[in-house]
Image 1 (cartoon, one colour):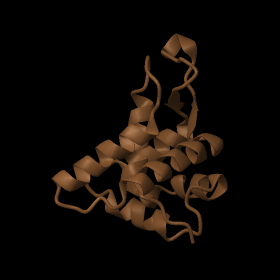
Image 2: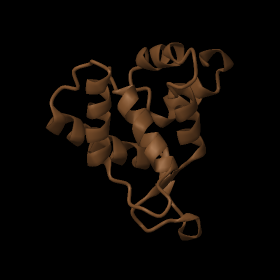
Image 3: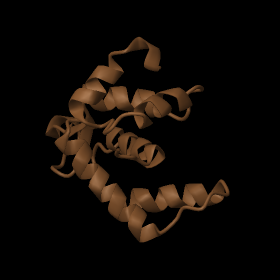
Image 4: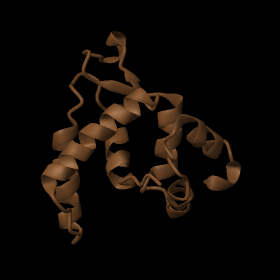
Length: 130
């Protein structure tokens, strides 16, 4: 069973969404994530491991169709992304600013690999997940 750091993935999705005009840089986003965790009183863990995980997530999210290269006319520079429809659906399930985001995360965690394209698309199509 594959487990994911949903808070880190949420941050990466938000950063991709807002990356017009600048490069997507997962390692600094992991540092910001760790700083936020520390500010909230949580232990962020090994920073190098978190940075590596952020880079792995970037690759996975791109390869599995949650990210796509940002078109030049939308601020693309060859090193940044836009969210695909799948990525937008994932962000809406994970978004911590929306009350009740724990249930979708729990449903995702119950899957063998919740970011597998087929698995995620089936889950996201179920109205009761949100």
